[in-house]
View 1 (cartoon, one colour):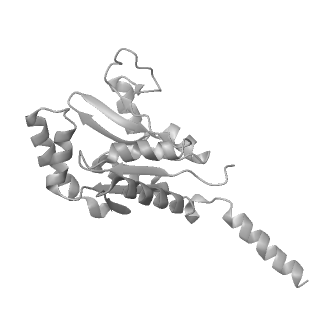
View 2 (view 1 turned 120 degrees about the vertical axis):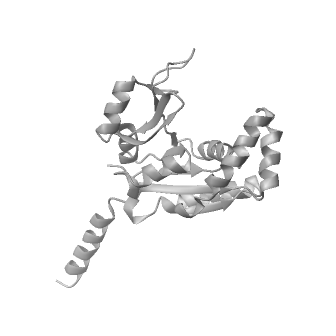
View 3 (view 1 turned 90 degrees about the horizontal axis):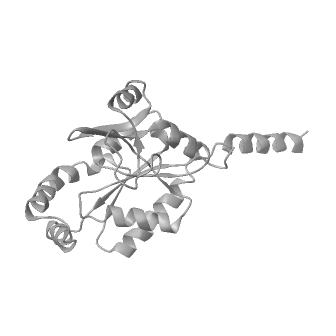
Length: 214
């Protein structure tokens, strides 16, 4: 058995707040972190491999996984389903491996209320200001104007869910936010629920007390 159970680390934020950059830095800091591989009903794109980019499933297979409780979270995006299969995540945390989820508040809510909910660590990333959020979106130069406007409108609803998370970080300085994120993960790995051998250690200590007074 592993020395500790792995964590389900949920990172959420409005688009442009720095979540994906922080997720990448977290995985560079600890190469043992595993990024959650989602399942989807869309067809593989050229170069994509089943089990690497996604688990590719038919609509019927996906719906069966949902009905059987084998999806930690799922959503329908346009005509396709996306979700996080429970089995590989469960195997990873049982082996002491942390699993990182870069998902929205809805997916995070589903995971926190799932059978693995007690092993979750949820962190919401806030921008320092709305003008700065918009500046970052425009600085990426990836999206047309209508997409940026839609992201900005959606961000207000996303930000309203901040109280549902274990921790909230204001990303006003990327390096400082990264340091705070690492501190949180390091501390949460020592949570009682993540240390399955603690009960045995305490039993041994009690036994040593009894031997001492025998």
